[in-house]
Image 1 (tube, rainbow, N blue to C red):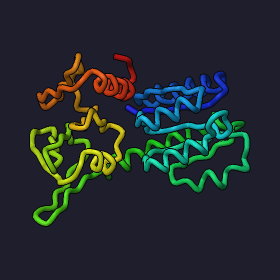
Image 2 (tube, one colour; image 1 turned 90 degrees about the vertical axis):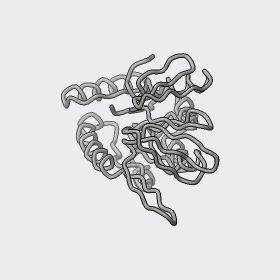
Image 3 (cartoon, rainbow, N blue to C red; image 1 turned 45 degrees about the vertical axis):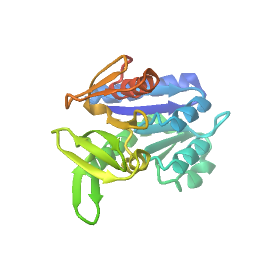
Length: 241
């Protein structure tokens, strides 16, 4: 499932863009969740709350926050993602392409013609990164390498963070949950509260204050934290709970 955010203050254009992208995914047999933001302030708040997407398609010139402002926030928060910039103002091209997150800059007048090629390139890059997303725990006594998609959830145990793997195996690393969450740089890994990080792809069920993982573990937390997780879960699966 790919998660895409579109931000453009022209609702007609944004709607056409969404339909075009949906059609691309139908034709290529790919699953997608698309969220359209007509207000750049709303998208800014989502980024600050770590409601992250795999791909951002941003108009450069918008009220409140411009596409460049949003790029600055992604950079400041060290968020690894991909960005396509759309604009009628080609004078911003050089500055925009200096951001490592920007992999395509498309003038609006040719956006639909160029977008399919951009999405093809995005998926090639996404697959490459998926295959290259290992996690390494290294200290004086051991060096362990595994892949993030195999992590079901993590929890705090005094000075350590315990990694619970999909097969039931456990690893541990000294540090705080927030430090390791930052190191993971993975939007599928959601900080549930100060005690857990859960991998959305390994959740079986969310009900009241319980989160059931596919490892059969049940994580209990308060309903405020569950609501945040439900929002992220809905983005991942492309439907509201």
